[in-house]
Image 1 (cartoon, rainbow, N blue to C red):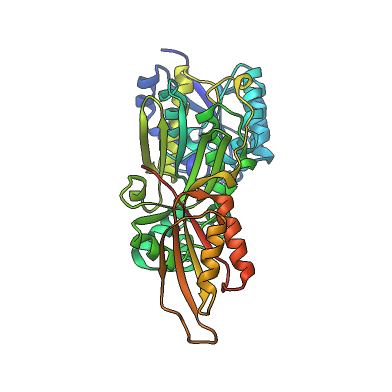
Image 2: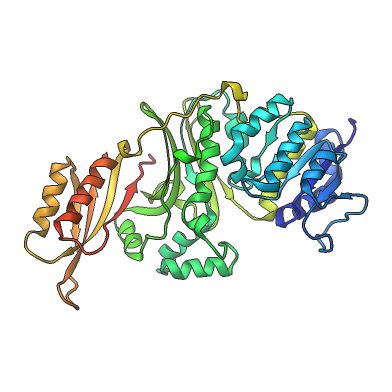
Length: 434
């Protein structure tokens, strides 16, 4: 049997503590499967006194995780601190500079600095493993980087944020408002006190940026992602979607097009019959379209201590077994520059909900603005006007045939200028998943 693998773990929160507990509990099984024992020899966390459910005797304690990475007697460094910069980044850079492989669950770090870190790793003949950074326990990274290495991927998409999926699922199944669902999500620990990172789509965007690089062999480009959150979704939209045969999900999509790579995170109406539409609650899912394998869907727990720790352990075992592929699937020197497709060139169907003043000329204005922008309507539904206060408004729902984002936005801007609308129009993209 090979000599033991000595681990340094920085960050002993929910995931870090769980990783340490599992290494302690599954020591024999892990050693059998990789041909060498795995032992934690150094740890770092903010609070020494807190119990974490594993025996820390014999482990060197470092108050500073950077010092652990620089000086610890370790063969691999596990970063579970979090954050795109600060000590997490400094510690990872320190470990890589020593030629020590890094295992991390830090999606923000990779989305912002993944290419630079991959280059640093290559310069020091080591790598970064990050299965836990995207979709928790789902083996999305291994699938993209290893199982599909002979495939050409045309599209990768999915449900990458459990908080948003939980909220949208409850809104649909229980008829509860967005605000009420968000409060429940916070009470259950699914959403942070400041939920902006989740409900604004930014968490999903970090994960998508990483998947895009693996899918298309490009440098990571977080700033190229169109991001729109779910806070404007209403019960009226949920009900209309069901009537039209759709469900609303926060969708993350990366698509290789003739004009470049399109990356977007936004609410979308997807066919209720599709496999992705059945993914409910806090579950995550990643779908991949490729030339050899066709379409596959991976679904499972996207967060939580056990699920994320499972992914971290998988990477640790790869390090122990000596199987460490290039960080982003290719050597950094072979990654292509990211070429961004224009978001407004995106084509597909759209759902539009308008609050239209019940007056002469309103519908003529809608017809005129749609026609002048070349938009063909698949259906128009007008609800009964609300006349309880002042001039009545009638909810009008439009579903378009395939058109461009630019055409839709131009038509809605024109309608707003015409003065026949009350409030902002609601627009949700219809995603063809067939």
